[in-house]
Image (cartoon, rainbow, N blue to C red; front, side, top):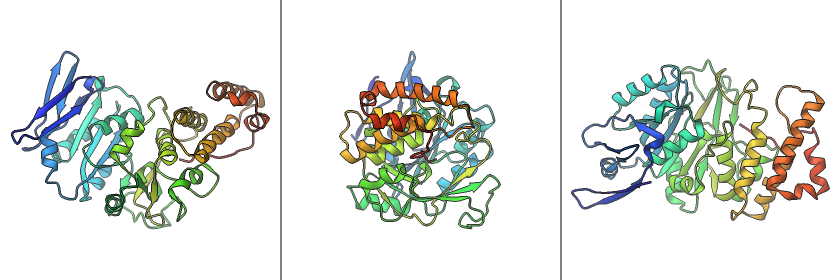
Length: 381
């Protein structure tokens, strides 16, 4: 990866690392938001210098909203406009992930209408690389001090960022805040999201959970749930954490939330009313008819456990991650299957765990946990 150092007429220098072999840039910028794209063979560099200088006068705008997009033409415009109406929103980064509908055209229209705040990128060749890779691409281009993620078929509610930005600016020991998200039916179009009659569920956490107890609350069968739409996290924290796990096709958001809860300090804020909506409809990927739905809880538990090895975590959180991994050897949330097929799946999972945690061979309690069909801690979301 090349390092490109750029010098402005004012003598202010800024260095940005960027690998553009993974994407093409489709952003449009007005005067003062000029973007230079230089290409050397298959590699190049995007100069965001003008953006950084312009940002110095952005006042209270401090949040970059990253929206991964896949076949979301119906709801995309509403999602983007809901973020733009917030004064703390510095920019909305749209990452088009190889949609087969008209999502790209909608994105280009939004960039043309809001050139100073809406930026569009896509993976090179228009490939579909998944939500994890798309969010990571957006994170690599983000300029805001704080990062919020929004799915393309969901919506930010009025006043979404101000309390969280204020808390993070005042409390430098916190890495992020989480707030409630309203799960709404697909027919929701402009109705009052605070109307409990329209709400399927309020995805939230109990009041008063200490940062060191967040992981336990979301892992154990307690009324605790953090949705990706309700997070606001420091950009430097996400970069240090490594972003999203791109090898997971489902559950990347929960994988990130588990890792944040295990290693960072997260604080709850508005937990009794929603700050964003999560729209339920037939195109949602985390649904039972998706082939990867039944396997995603185990895949997430295994991924986070592997990540935890060699990390500086509390003894409590390390034990929690191991316990949940062992439980998910036998956990099945898919359609009913035969006893023999379930046992074959459990053996395959047990062998996968044995490769990263040899204790599975010698602790009898693990055998009982792993081969039980009893449902234990659940991956929520």
